[in-house]
Image (tube, rainbow, N blue to C red; front, side):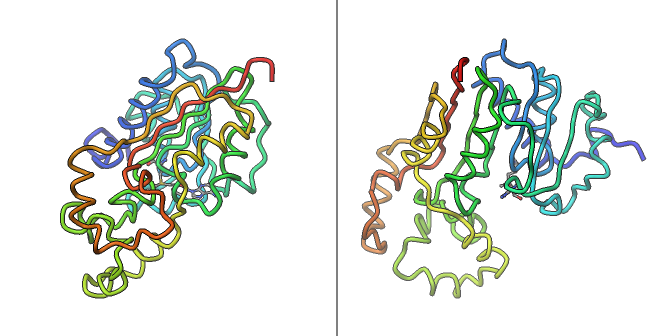
Length: 260
Ligand SMILES: C[S@@+](CC[C@H](N)C(=O)[O-])C[C@H]1O[C@@H](n2cnc3c(N)ncnc32)[C@H](O)[C@@H]1O
């Protein structure tokens, strides 16, 4: 059966547009060419976006294509067609990035969108990703939210930022989880999150041989600083650099020097 735009879930459409905005806003238009790699590609929103942006081919890798209830990899060609993309330009691979071997330094752009906070070892993830960036090519990392921010627990349906900011850093978090009947699936998802910070990510990217050309991190605002003061007594902030409590959205764009 053919698909049309009405049969594409709005979630996917939103994620595709999100990926397209990131590529168009942060990778110069003249560089939208060659091979694109999306690591932790989910349902392929970034792959479609990269092809729409003008990359010649796009590869998406994800350890599992079963995380999105509506998505079936068998239908990916049809999804491409909805967006008027030739599916032959795309390749979706279901594999753990650490167990894949692609040609090193062969992609003009490698992207990791909303995935770095979900992996057990962000430094090795960045090492792997950077190794695929061609000389002169780009690495685009964008995610929201990092662990220490007020919604860094990703339990969005259970703990909203107004009522329970930094719920996961609260002294009574265990009780709250019970009271709110947070599902075991959500808690497993929570426990898989890492605690990487913006500064650590920058260091890993530089250590992987890339040069940072653009970076953004959410800074404290009057509202978020006031929110912290209202909630400080409930939180266990021991050993935490308080600047990281405001690191919600972060963006890094890096480039491999043309001669390396
Ligand atoms: C929050 S989703 C983001 C998906 C997609 N980038 C998007 O923009 O919607 C993070 C993805 O990273 C994938 N992932 C985590 N660890 C991985 C690994 N070692 N290798 C490949 N994919 C991985 C997960 O399966 C998940 O689909």
